[in-house]
Length: 140
Image (cartoon, rainbow, N blue to C red; front, side, top):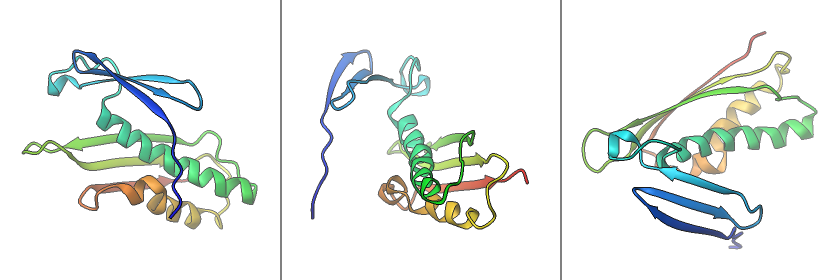
């Protein structure tokens, strides 16, 4: 099995904050623990990034398909939320994603988008016990 590696450098900055540097692009991001877990909540938490990864993976994977089929997904909006466990161990137990699609998405493309929403690489990588509550709204 071949493996694609993407180099990253991560540094613990103290006070529950980390910095991640993406090698290929040079982009840096900061994570911070959430306020409900002793952090300042001044940036995305690591679990926020899991939810963001799922939403953007669905959009990116759908975008690849849309490009091949000449469908415009520009303007798609996503409402995302995570639900954390109240028992131990602390973990994500539910992810809610609400996709608000732009007008004009062909009816023939819609089932394909729904399949992608369940089969993108991040979705396939998440533990099956995490509830993924995904809905898609088309205005027309």
